[in-house]
Amino acid sequence: RKEVEQDPGPFNVPEGATVAFNCTYSNSASQSFFWYRQDCRKEPKLLMSVYSSGNEDGRFTAQLNRASQYISLLIRDSKLSDSATYLCVVNINPGTYKYIFGTGTRLKVLA
Amino acid sequence: EAGVTQFPSHSVIEKGQTVTLRCDPISGHDNLYWYRRVMGKEIKFLLHFVKESKQDESGMPNNRFLAERTGGTYSTLKVQPAELEDSGVYFCASQRNLNNEQFFGPGTRLTVL
Image 1 (cartoon, chains in turn orange, green):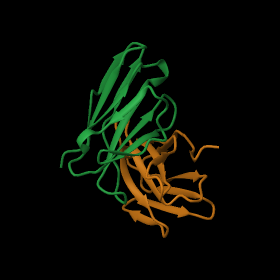
Image 2 (spheres, each protein chain N blue to C red):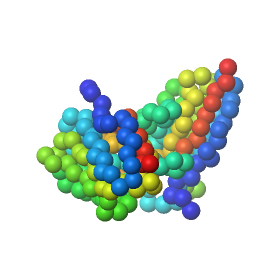
Image 3 (cartoon, helix red, strand yellow):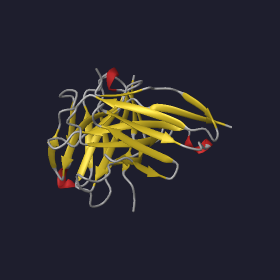
Image 4 (cartoon, each protein chain N blue to C red):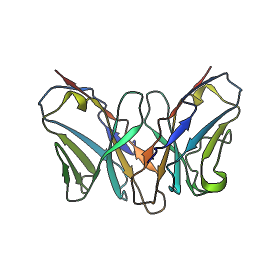
Protein backbone atom coordinates (compact mmCIF):
# COMPACT_ATOMS: atom_id res chain seq x y z
CA ARG A 1 0.00 0.00 0.00
CA LYS A 2 1.34 3.43 -0.90
CA GLU A 3 2.06 5.84 1.93
CA VAL A 4 0.04 8.59 0.28
CA GLU A 5 -2.71 7.79 -2.21
CA GLN A 6 -4.54 10.07 -4.56
CA ASP A 7 -6.91 9.57 -7.45
CA PRO A 8 -4.77 10.52 -10.46
CA GLY A 9 -7.76 11.85 -12.40
CA PRO A 10 -7.95 13.66 -14.70
CA PHE A 11 -10.82 15.68 -13.37
CA ASN A 12 -12.33 17.68 -16.22
CA VAL A 13 -14.66 20.37 -14.91
CA PRO A 14 -16.31 23.45 -16.45
CA GLU A 15 -15.33 26.92 -15.35
CA GLY A 16 -17.18 27.95 -12.22
CA ALA A 17 -17.61 24.41 -10.96
CA THR A 18 -16.70 23.20 -7.50
CA VAL A 19 -14.30 20.27 -7.37
CA ALA A 20 -12.92 18.27 -4.47
CA PHE A 21 -9.93 15.98 -4.16
CA ASN A 22 -9.20 13.51 -1.42
CA CYS A 23 -5.94 11.99 -0.33
CA THR A 24 -5.38 9.18 2.14
CA TYR A 25 -2.22 8.49 4.12
CA SER A 26 -1.15 5.29 5.78
CA ASN A 27 1.06 6.42 8.66
CA SER A 28 -0.94 7.54 11.66
CA ALA A 29 2.17 9.29 12.99
CA SER A 30 2.02 11.82 10.16
CA GLN A 31 2.29 15.32 11.56
CA SER A 32 2.14 17.86 8.77
CA PHE A 33 0.07 17.99 5.64
CA PHE A 34 0.22 20.13 2.54
CA TRP A 35 -1.27 20.62 -0.86
CA TYR A 36 1.24 21.57 -3.52
CA ARG A 37 0.38 22.62 -7.05
CA GLN A 38 2.50 21.57 -10.00
CA ASP A 39 2.11 22.98 -13.48
CA CYS A 40 3.29 20.97 -16.46
CA ARG A 41 7.10 20.62 -16.45
CA LYS A 42 7.44 23.02 -13.53
CA GLU A 43 8.39 22.60 -9.91
CA PRO A 44 5.86 21.94 -7.15
CA LYS A 45 4.71 25.09 -5.35
CA LEU A 46 2.97 25.24 -2.00
CA LEU A 47 -0.74 25.89 -2.36
CA MET A 48 -1.62 25.60 1.29
CA SER A 49 -0.79 23.83 4.50
CA VAL A 50 -3.56 21.76 6.05
CA TYR A 51 -4.39 22.36 9.68
CA SER A 52 -6.35 20.16 12.06
CA SER A 53 -9.21 22.63 12.28
CA GLY A 54 -9.40 23.03 8.52
CA ASN A 55 -8.39 26.18 6.72
CA GLU A 56 -9.49 28.34 3.85
CA ASP A 57 -7.63 30.58 1.46
CA GLY A 58 -9.92 32.36 -0.95
CA ARG A 59 -11.56 29.77 -3.17
CA PHE A 60 -9.54 26.92 -1.65
CA THR A 61 -10.49 24.96 1.46
CA ALA A 62 -8.39 22.22 3.00
CA GLN A 63 -9.50 19.78 5.65
CA LEU A 64 -7.86 17.06 7.68
CA ASN A 65 -9.54 14.00 9.14
CA ARG A 66 -7.05 12.28 11.41
CA ALA A 67 -9.43 9.51 12.46
CA SER A 68 -9.90 8.38 8.87
CA GLN A 69 -6.43 9.48 7.78
CA TYR A 70 -7.38 11.62 4.85
CA ILE A 71 -7.06 15.19 3.74
CA SER A 72 -9.15 17.02 1.22
CA LEU A 73 -8.95 20.04 -1.03
CA LEU A 74 -12.02 21.88 -2.25
CA ILE A 75 -11.81 24.40 -5.05
CA ARG A 76 -14.82 26.66 -5.56
CA ASP A 77 -15.62 28.69 -8.67
CA SER A 78 -12.92 26.96 -10.74
CA LYS A 79 -10.85 29.13 -13.07
CA LEU A 80 -9.03 28.08 -16.22
CA SER A 81 -5.83 28.96 -14.39
CA ASP A 82 -6.55 26.30 -11.76
CA SER A 83 -5.69 23.62 -14.33
CA ALA A 84 -2.68 21.82 -12.88
CA THR A 85 -1.67 18.74 -10.91
CA TYR A 86 -2.41 18.90 -7.20
CA LEU A 87 0.02 17.01 -5.02
CA CYS A 88 -0.87 15.73 -1.59
CA VAL A 89 2.18 15.88 0.67
CA VAL A 90 2.65 14.39 4.11
CA ASN A 91 5.47 14.89 6.57
CA ILE A 92 6.16 12.48 9.40
CA ASN A 93 8.15 14.11 12.18
CA PRO A 94 10.02 14.12 14.45
CA GLY A 95 12.72 11.85 13.23
CA THR A 96 12.55 12.74 9.60
CA TYR A 97 11.54 15.86 7.75
CA LYS A 98 11.23 14.44 4.29
CA TYR A 99 8.09 15.01 2.31
CA ILE A 100 6.10 12.01 1.14
CA PHE A 101 4.20 12.76 -2.04
CA GLY A 102 1.13 11.31 -3.63
CA THR A 103 1.17 10.81 -7.39
CA GLY A 104 -0.95 13.91 -7.84
CA THR A 105 -4.43 14.59 -9.15
CA ARG A 106 -4.73 16.26 -12.53
CA LEU A 107 -7.34 18.96 -12.87
CA LYS A 108 -8.41 20.47 -16.16
CA VAL A 109 -10.84 23.36 -16.06
CA LEU A 110 -12.68 23.75 -19.34
CA ALA A 111 -14.00 26.96 -20.86
CA GLU B 1 14.56 36.84 -2.85
CA ALA B 2 16.02 34.50 -5.47
CA GLY B 3 14.53 31.05 -5.55
CA VAL B 4 16.17 27.66 -5.60
CA THR B 5 18.20 27.18 -8.76
CA GLN B 6 19.33 23.97 -10.37
CA PHE B 7 21.82 23.24 -13.12
CA PRO B 8 21.64 21.89 -15.73
CA SER B 9 17.96 22.05 -16.63
CA HIS B 10 18.37 19.05 -18.92
CA SER B 11 21.04 16.40 -19.28
CA VAL B 12 21.19 13.57 -21.78
CA ILE B 13 23.91 11.02 -21.21
CA GLU B 14 24.72 7.46 -22.16
CA LYS B 15 24.55 4.54 -19.82
CA GLY B 16 27.80 4.23 -17.92
CA GLN B 17 28.64 7.92 -18.01
CA THR B 18 28.82 10.23 -15.04
CA VAL B 19 26.59 13.22 -14.42
CA THR B 20 26.72 15.85 -11.71
CA LEU B 21 23.68 17.91 -10.82
CA ARG B 22 23.92 21.12 -8.88
CA CYS B 23 21.51 22.88 -6.57
CA ASP B 24 21.79 26.37 -5.13
CA PRO B 25 19.34 26.82 -2.27
CA ILE B 26 17.75 30.06 -1.17
CA SER B 27 20.30 32.07 0.79
CA GLY B 28 20.09 31.38 4.51
CA HIS B 29 18.27 28.08 4.15
CA ASP B 30 20.14 25.47 6.18
CA ASN B 31 17.96 22.58 5.06
CA LEU B 32 18.43 21.17 1.58
CA TYR B 33 16.63 18.18 0.11
CA TRP B 34 16.98 16.13 -3.03
CA TYR B 35 13.95 14.40 -4.55
CA ARG B 36 13.42 12.46 -7.75
CA ARG B 37 10.46 11.73 -9.97
CA VAL B 38 10.75 8.85 -12.39
CA MET B 39 8.26 8.47 -15.23
CA GLY B 40 4.75 7.76 -14.05
CA LYS B 41 5.66 7.64 -10.38
CA GLU B 42 5.37 9.99 -7.45
CA ILE B 43 8.13 12.35 -6.35
CA LYS B 44 10.36 10.48 -3.93
CA PHE B 45 12.77 11.69 -1.29
CA LEU B 46 16.48 11.00 -1.75
CA LEU B 47 18.23 12.82 1.08
CA HIS B 48 18.30 15.77 3.46
CA PHE B 49 21.19 18.03 4.43
CA VAL B 50 21.30 20.29 7.41
CA LYS B 51 24.06 22.70 6.52
CA GLU B 52 26.87 20.43 5.34
CA SER B 53 25.74 17.33 7.26
CA LYS B 54 23.64 14.52 5.86
CA GLN B 55 20.65 14.29 8.17
CA ASP B 56 18.78 11.55 6.34
CA GLU B 57 19.95 9.67 3.28
CA SER B 58 17.45 6.83 3.52
CA GLY B 59 16.09 7.50 0.05
CA MET B 60 19.33 7.17 -1.87
CA PRO B 61 18.78 4.27 -4.30
CA ASN B 62 22.29 2.80 -4.23
CA ASN B 63 25.97 3.66 -3.99
CA ARG B 64 26.07 5.00 -7.53
CA PHE B 65 24.58 8.19 -6.10
CA LEU B 66 26.75 10.59 -4.12
CA ALA B 67 25.53 13.86 -2.68
CA GLU B 68 27.69 16.56 -1.17
CA ARG B 69 27.19 19.96 0.34
CA THR B 70 30.64 21.19 1.19
CA GLY B 71 30.52 24.46 3.08
CA GLY B 72 26.82 24.16 3.64
CA THR B 73 25.83 26.24 0.63
CA TYR B 74 25.22 24.63 -2.76
CA SER B 75 24.88 20.89 -3.17
CA THR B 76 25.85 18.44 -5.89
CA LEU B 77 24.38 15.06 -6.70
CA LYS B 78 26.61 12.80 -8.74
CA VAL B 79 25.45 9.66 -10.48
CA GLN B 80 28.30 7.33 -11.46
CA PRO B 81 27.91 5.23 -13.52
CA ALA B 82 24.45 6.20 -14.74
CA GLU B 83 21.93 3.47 -15.56
CA LEU B 84 18.77 3.64 -17.67
CA GLU B 85 16.52 3.56 -14.60
CA ASP B 86 18.13 6.75 -13.29
CA SER B 87 16.22 8.77 -15.87
CA GLY B 88 13.78 11.20 -14.34
CA VAL B 89 13.44 14.67 -12.94
CA TYR B 90 15.65 15.53 -9.97
CA PHE B 91 14.29 18.26 -7.74
CA CYS B 92 16.11 20.12 -5.05
CA ALA B 93 14.26 21.90 -2.26
CA SER B 94 15.42 24.24 0.47
CA GLN B 95 13.90 25.20 3.78
CA ARG B 96 14.85 27.84 6.28
CA ASN B 97 13.96 25.79 9.33
CA LEU B 98 12.11 22.56 9.87
CA ASN B 99 8.68 24.05 10.47
CA ASN B 100 8.70 26.12 7.30
CA GLU B 101 7.70 25.40 3.74
CA GLN B 102 10.09 23.58 1.43
CA PHE B 103 10.74 25.59 -1.73
CA PHE B 104 11.46 23.57 -4.82
CA GLY B 105 13.83 24.30 -7.66
CA PRO B 106 12.82 23.86 -11.31
CA GLY B 107 14.42 20.44 -11.48
CA THR B 108 16.98 18.76 -13.71
CA ARG B 109 15.54 16.43 -16.31
CA LEU B 110 17.99 13.55 -16.70
CA THR B 111 17.77 11.14 -19.61
CA VAL B 112 20.05 8.13 -19.67
CA LEU B 113 20.24 6.42 -23.09
